[in-house]
Image 1 (tube, helix red, strand yellow):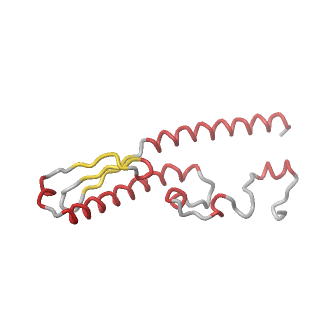
Image 2 (image 1 turned 30 degrees about the vertical axis):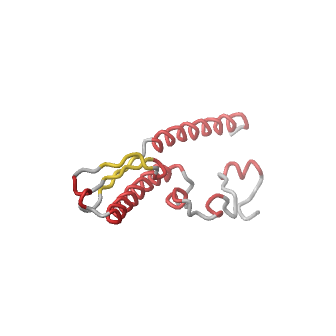
Image 3 (image 1 turned 120 degrees about the horizontal axis):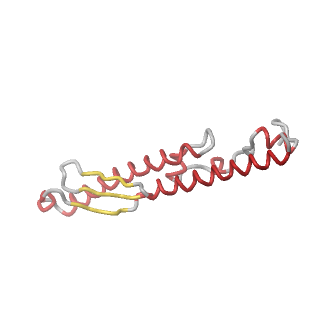
Length: 138
């Protein structure tokens, strides 16, 4: 493969990845999850990154709750909804990441620096060949 063809191929790959990123951003903005407390006193909806977007009281049961009970029900429903939203975000992100990267850890902010900067840079074989780098070199 000549140099011009290779550059055109790399540019096409760049455009494909750029388009995929745009689609991913749309999917991330559309994330929404709702969870309802065990006895249906409260329903909580969150968006991307677990941001609270709505609170509903499907029944009048909340009126008979103490403030502490209502707080507990709200927090439990919020936690469930947030976990669902994080799972959705993980599903959106996972196909775009290199093999071996933990999308769930990235979404939750628990990934260590090695997730972002591996010990050896990720390069395709063709790029390594163009640069004259063999796999065992560092």
